[in-house]
Image (cartoon, rainbow, N blue to C red; front, side, top):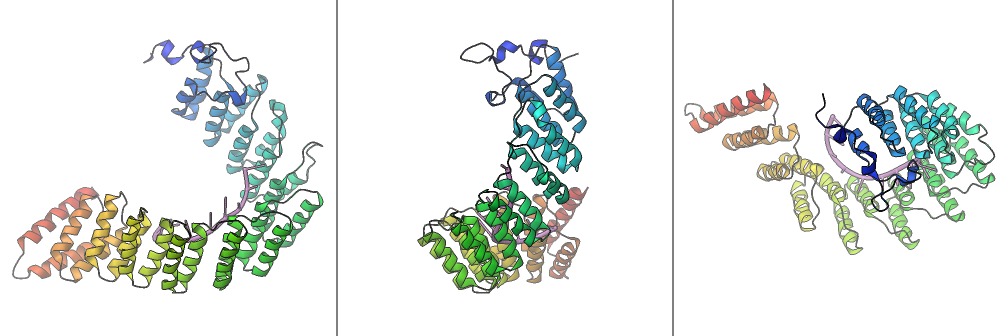
Length: 456
DNA sequence: TTAGGGTTAG
């Protein structure tokens, strides 16, 4: 029993003919020419892996000729869901039907196999790529090596890397980058340098990423002098350091207490034709904040504006964070107000930090305003922020305000901790000793009922 | 295809 007629379930092939020529393309299975979304592709997306395989065969059974993209989409889906026996089955169909394949398909499957720790299978699939009517390039080798290394399988990656891969199959810079990364993960700096030298000997030109991998390692280890030497090497090699190189170097210098030098690097980068971005300013800002030099951190904001670099939400958050930590939440509040003028939308982190900071300095009215704005923007405050606000208001003897806050919290299906409820109830009891404030008590009753219905 | 940088919380 089917809900749709046969023609709806298995639209006839003629419906998918090329709109201009109205005849089937000769090479319909060619990977690059199958960008039109066929009904099968739309259909298969809605199915679970088992039904997808079933449907694939059913459509075929009713005369539908699957294009390469049908196979590929199905295979990606199956691999993503780790249905590797079905992957094997569909791959076999591709092979026996001699359908030309795109190397990207194998890259994707190899990555999923490695994620599932099926390293032997990943390696075998890589070896079998030529049997699939596909010429492998270093791209699939690199994907295999990188998947192995990211799964902590460096020895296997090295074994594969050292295997001969045919006369026309030459490793490229990415291959070496991946292997260098692998060595540095285990802290083998000398091994990495040796591989770098091998790369040069084999006339494989290192790229910016090669240097960035080395610099990133050195900066994290605090080996600033060596990092700067590698930096000089980049220039010597005729390669241009990129924005990431500068950012890593700046961060390394800041960590090493060399703020002034980090700033110099930022000016140098502009001189060398690489415009500092918001991240570079944020690195300086964060460092100044850490050193409790808030005023200078604020000046960076002004400097950014002068240099036509629009501060983003993370920049503002960096400042707001340090202001709040220093008990200067009023300044943080001003910054937040300034963000709106600059058309920069606060995010959940902005609101959370500002609300907490304002509670900390007992500016509950403002904190309450921040919470409301947060809700209006579709963000959720943390439970401890609500706790702090309600408890703070209670401590100031403002039980009615605290109850109103609680009302809104409950309306939004949020909860506070049990101890906050206690504080609120005790606070209301204190208010009403011998002179019960009926309005407050009624509100609390309502809230308790609402709270129990949320919990149930 | 490879790295990678600045915020909150967890």
